[in-house]
Length: 358
Image (cartoon, rainbow, N blue to C red; front, side, top):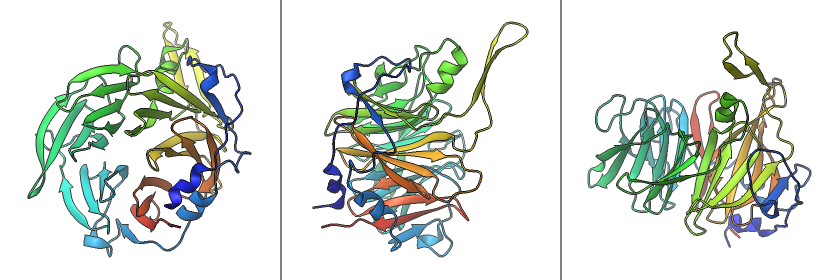
């Protein structure tokens, strides 16, 4: 039995009310408390803190001498390939399960197959790679005998921030003019429908800021889309039809301080202030498998505590979850053989660690 299934020691968490401006049936709401560390087996963190790395990418003496600028996103596909979005070089590097670079997609530019500011990637069930630029353009690349080649492109009706694949469909995150946060697009770039609730606030800029999605994952087996946020402590799940399923709240999440004001000419003003020690920022939600997801929240610590990523695990079917501990780096992807961690210090690199099997 793979180690990832050791997460099945699961219980429901207590239900509480929270005035968060997002309307859900409270029978589906869960509160995740850091004091509750025993509802899941501790094997996940034992696994990701191991020292016996399998390979590293982003070091001069590593496979292919690959150097990374900044890893924006990683997608694991069929347990055989890792797609790595580097938003400094503005390319997508394709690594095999041994960490060897087998392809490099795109370059800086505005033409077909080129990127201006890539923000998210997704790989569908057929292996088609979609790359979303902040300028609302999405480009699709198909695998040919010579490698991935540009195929088609289309334009979104909003500015994307994140993406995930659900079969041949792609779900993009980003706030549109109708205040929806998630958007389903078909394989040929046709907008099918939008869903997801924005953060309800009287201040319009606050509503936009707090609706910013930090990550989205798609479980094809459960036909579920799950989203997390940068500045508010919620994890929300929807069916593939856009119906809300459950909401989980991180009880110990400490938001970044904000300031609301009105300008002399009557315009509303809102801004995030300098983060205080102990403030949290939601970073990455990723699939462990079709049943469970890992969510990491960065904790601001000016003392430079090395273990500054509070890490949680969620059951994607029920929304129940538990605090798993603190990690020193971001976990970027899981496969059936490895998980990948990303560290930017002393230089950007991805490190693969083997999974433990019973």
